[in-house]
Length: 299
Picture 1 (cartoon, one colour):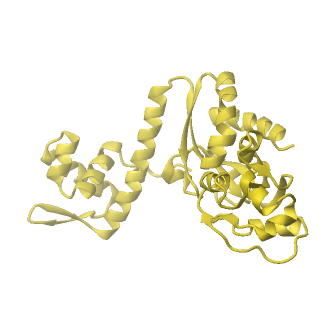
Picture 2: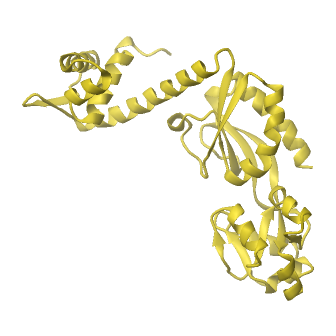
Picture 3: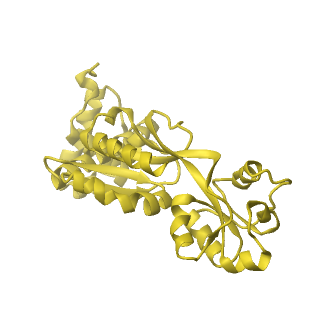
C-alpha cells in the first residue's frame, strides 16, 4: 500500500535536513550542498511543515535537532546511502547489473574466487563486488544483494539456499606428525589441538564422530581458518580445516590428513538474500549458478 504523500518528502528536503543534523548547522550544510544558508533553512522548514512536526529548536539563529529528529536523521542517512549506491551501480553498468555480495573470507578466497570466472563468463553483463562480513547484518542498512552465511538457515528476513555441509579434515605438518607418531584420527587426542572461536564444538564433534574417548584438550584459538592453517603448517598443532581449504596444502605436502573429511554437524554454507530482491535478475542468475557449483562440490 502506498504511503500518503505527506510521509514521502522530496529528496531535496531530506538531503538538507540530514546535512544540517550531521554537520551541526545550516551554514555548514549550505557549504557542503553548495546552497545558500537561507535556502537550507527554507528546505528544513518545508520538511517540518510537510510532516507536521518540529524537527529543530531555534535558539539564537541556531538549529538544534530534537531527539526524535536525530533518530529520524539516522534513518534518512541510511536511505540516502542506499539510493546513492544504487545510482552509482546503475551508472557504472547501464543495462546490466551489479551484484554486491558479502562473503566469508575463507569461503570467498578458497572456494568462490577460483570458480567465479565461470559465472562472469556466462553472465558478461553482471559485475560482482565482494566484501567481507563475518556475521549476519541488516541487508537494508548494509546495501548488499546477497551474502554467504555459515550455520543454520536462520538469517532474519532472508531467503536461503543451502550450498553444502561443512566437511572438516584433521591436518598436521609432516614434521609434527612424524615426531608425535600421528597416523590415525584417534592419535590427535595426544596432540596440541588448534581451534577456531566460531567453531567451539568442532573438536568435540570430531571426537564423537570417530569414537575417541575423553574430552579434547584446549589449545590455541584463532579467529580465522587461514591463520589457523598457517599455524598448523608451521607445526604448532593439529587443525580441523574445511576440506576446500586444506586440499591444496595437503596436495603439495605442507600438511598431511590424519582423517577423512567428514561433516561434523557444526553447520552448512548458505547463500542468503533479502526477500524483496529474490527475483532481481543478477541475483537470480548467481543463485542458479552457485547452486550448480555447490551440487558438484558437495558430493
